[in-house]
Image 1 (tube, helix red, strand yellow):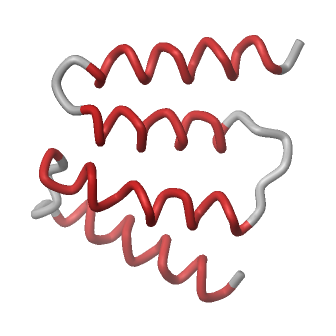
Image 2 (cartoon, rainbow, N blue to C red):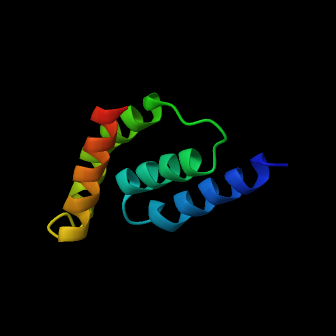
Length: 80
């Protein structure tokens, strides 16, 4: 039962972004997968690092919110 919302969210995020930015679609799908997964490991964060360069040209990375989130993410990775 828990996999149905996960599949629906991954499908929806992929379809939402795939028409304009495939790199962002892959990143959003992996974020949705991890956010709805029962188990979280450090490996999932490595997946995001691998997909971030593909999505970076399409993200509004100049905003303070993005940099604050990125620094928090790096801090969490170091702490992990």
